[in-house]
Image (tube, rainbow, N blue to C red; front, side):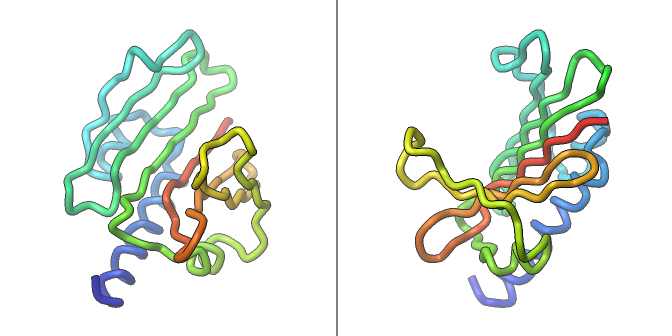
Length: 151
């Protein structure tokens, strides 16, 4: 991929994260429109607290999967949105810090996690937190965005 293509993909990924953050409380159907993928219920992952939805992306997309976990009890309303990024694109960790903040809280993998588990850059927000998974090694690339929110 050329540097220009990488830059376009980086902006596309950042724009998707921004849109999901802005619309985090939206119904799954509305989130589908933001990222252009169909979300389907996943009953085997749902429980008495959360309803889980997943959507897969087309091969040319910079995304692999979107998972949405919405609280069933709406008091307070809360949820988690997980956007998985394909390993065909590398958004460098420096670009992530430049976009979201140069001093994130760091959440390194625990010793019980598998080798190669990412480091998370965590940003506290009024609505809860944004966590960005960064692969370890060279290069360090953005692999996942986790939007954990409540109202």
